[in-house]
Image (tube, rainbow, N blue to C red):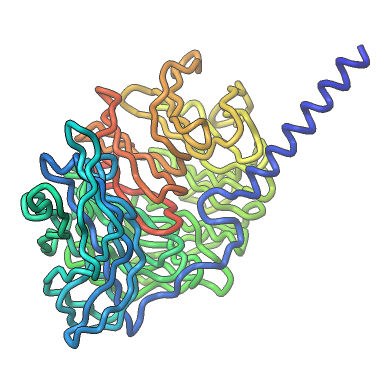
Length: 479
């Protein structure tokens, strides 16, 4: 028996080391992390998106060397190049070409430098001649102080490939339509002080909203007219009018609160905010913009789940490995329960009788009964699970994370894995667009969102977002 015990001990130590490594790698914004771009003030920001490639352009493979925006005086201001290659792999969806912060003002266009290009032919890849100097793409660009501008560009394939032996960066540029509030989907970029807004039906980015530093939790009000953003590095909640895209006055929190995730109460007037820095859940009155109450919870709280009746709030206390249950009407703690190490996210079954919890330091999905929060099952999902969602139409349970680049789909009754959706990346957040019946998976390390058709199980689109994307919220979200 001694050799068996030693083997088990070694495996236990290995599992422990892997767990520590996963925790150190972090999930979304690291707990207590204070790094991130500051709020835009006198400067503005520009995001350039390349539209899907036209037919025939899939034969191209173009290496981009640099990108810059050009002022009216002809001065080139470098941008961060985010798309190093234009190819078949990169061309099926809209892609972020480049972005950067700029002095406010008007610009005559942007320029790109080409490192090389090839064209696939029947005889193989043919190398194309490319310009030796950056090429200007004319565009009327206005960068406003404190705001972000979005420019869409289209590759004109017929003009770009000249007589089959040369490539010229022939692009046309236009300002995309802003997503209407009823169709908008939003992603907070914790490392970039911004929120990416895209049309959930067309799967195209149309706007980027500048926010306070460290944006994390997002909440849409009941009619989708306003967006609330937890500016974690500024101890504030930003308010955005989605109709105009204009920032409204922020709601100041207490110094050191570090707001994380949020939820809107059923009355539509009370905002629940997890204050990670204060180990509390605060209740804000949106009318008076003041704090109504504050409830103490466990250490380093981050996750928040409001039940569908709006009666109970479940706060995931990552630091103390517990869940705190808060009565929303009474604004009081009514229960606590221990969890696996470092709980991250939770989801309720369709009938509200079971609570599913994923944790950073565990290989198990924990299933708790509601309301007593007794453990009824522990389901092996592998180390690195970071997100969980229940489809309220089917009751299927979706678990994402560092699970081999896929989302596990579990049967709601047996909790046996019945499918796996390939997303080629770790999944930090999941949401379902109800009308489109699509699953949106946030891939933080890739800075992308994968859009998956739930009927065909095929990926419909991939969207590029900003740095350290944290959370998704949709108008028309299945709940």
